[in-house]
Length: 221
Image (cartoon, rainbow, N blue to C red; front, side, top):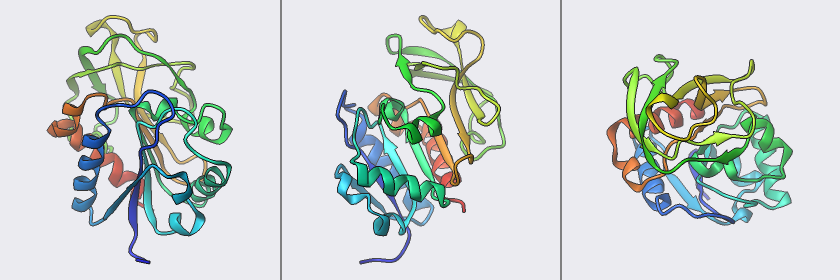
C-alpha cells in the first residue's frame, strides 16, 4: 500500500446524479497532479476507512447526493476532519448526508433548491484567498445558483463568493447570497463551493483556478 499522501475523490450518489461528475473527477485529477498529488476516485463507502484516510492530503465530495456514507465511513471521515484533515465539497454535495449532524455542522446550511440554469454574475469577496485569487472581482458565470435552507453567512464561516441576484432570475437570498465559503471550526479545513453544475465548467480556466485553489487550501496543514 502506498504511503505518499493523495487525494480521495468521492462521487457516490443516492439522489440526482450530475452528468458532470466524470469531467469533474478528471479535472480534479489534473489539478491535484499540479499540486504533486495523485487521485483515487471511488464510489465505495467502504473505502473511507481510518487507515485509508490517514494517507489523504484531502477528501473531495464531488456532487454527492443523498445518503452516501455508512456509519463506519461517517465515523472515519468525522475523525479525519476533527484531527486536521481537509474536506472540499463541490456543488451538489450541499445535498449529501441530509441526516448526518456533523456534515450539517460543516456546511452550516443545506441545499434548498435552484432556479433554471442561466447566466449571472459572481462577486469575489476575498481576492486573496487561494480559491478566488485568480478570479475577476465580478465574474460572469452560468450555473444553477443554489439557494439554501439557512443563510450561509455566519460569524464562524468565511464567505469567498456571492451571487448577484440582480443578474439572474429566481434567487431567494437577496443582496447577500453566498456561493462559496470555508472555515476551520471543526479541526480541519473545510471549503464548499456551490458552483460546478455543467460538464463545461470543468474545462473553464476560471473555474479550474477556483477549484484548484480550493483544493490547494484544503491540503495545507
